[in-house]
Image (cartoon, rainbow over all chains, first blue to last red; front, side):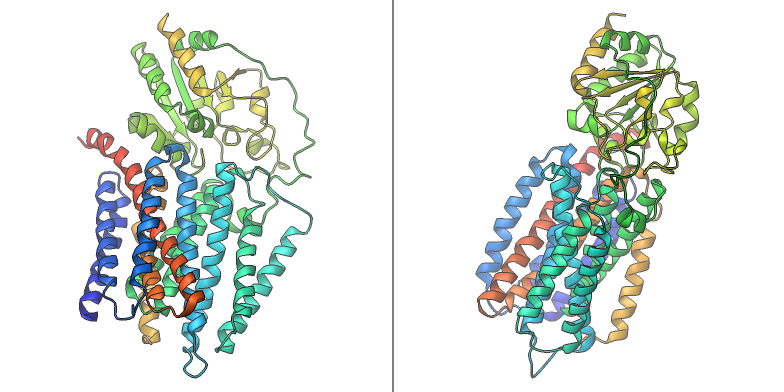
Length: 460
Length: 98
């Protein structure tokens, strides 16, 4: 039987790699997830016959059924806009599972027949990483879902975090090297500390940095799964886990690079800390405008660039925007979409939403492709984006977002900002764009405002 | 136990594989790909099954049960959201590739 199981695991590993490869090309992406899904089904099915499974079949099936139904239902029901936090929570669950596996293995470790050192070290390491990914992802989920609104920060926070992390690692080292019979208590303290560290490390990180953090936790979970795969002598877990670990690390780097920051900078910098950027006075004032005036500007414009942000996602305004776009195109207005790499809550988040609405790819552009076009643009329409168009990233070295590449919306002839209220962005930094002479603020829900503009454009 | 160096080779090769397969991914696929790789590490479910399958006593069984619940959620949820996201790319891509 073990032979059949190993063959199935081998095929599953191949399918995962092929699936991921296909997922990285738009044309074959859909096939990719199906192949990976087949691999997963195959691996899961043969595991029921695994010789190491001696009993508890009832509990295994019950756990799988309950969890699958709940996950299926929540995954189907969730709105496209809330995808990032769903990925975060599912990812956290994977990390938690890896940590729980390690806990079972370590609890079973026998005084008289202990596991070898390498296995123990990897089990503990996987437990540490998995537990951190679990609690950290849960915090990320809670933040994006709006359950946690504030970013808790205090002086010397990093020192405290590092101290907790150091103690956790030392305790883990002790667990791994002492080798035998933990009596449970040290193991319990170890898990509590690891979980606490995940929470403490994630809570101070806010807004724009969250995509990087979720991606990082995704990579970490992959590593944890890979390590526990070694412990359980399961090559499918080893391969899939490490492949995800390295792919996730690369993805994290790409995202951090898009924001011109290093990963350590994201994790340990004082982003949005109270002392910096708070006291900078902004000259000028925010000037409101009404929808019909915006419609007039756009209907007679030569070129319009739309910059969508999280506000568009929240208001579900993507369909209305596509409607407006088509209308403007009929009037020979050139319409383009400019997407910042970290607009929304994840890279590609805006692309997914616009794809959902049916906006074709060839009018959607990346930051590098479109930035030089802003000076020749009649109207730039900013929909619920904030930090990614804040010119202080270019001008003010004291600003926490200084150095982050931004869309040069401020260079357009006219800038219209659709925004719900006068508050600052997710990072809490004042946006100087809003105070510019050529900027007008359209206050209200993005979907309603776009509808109002569309209705007015029709009358021209 | 598995031969240590073979495991090391597996880790090394898998690491390079992961790096290679996504090195040229377009930005539009970043979120779906993150979601897809999130699904792939849902393979942890087979480990969770084994862990629960040889768990002894209440505490181990409880932890093993939690492991299977979490892992199955990772796999199923990861699949559903990835599939939903990529579903939307299907039609648009046909238009573009033609």
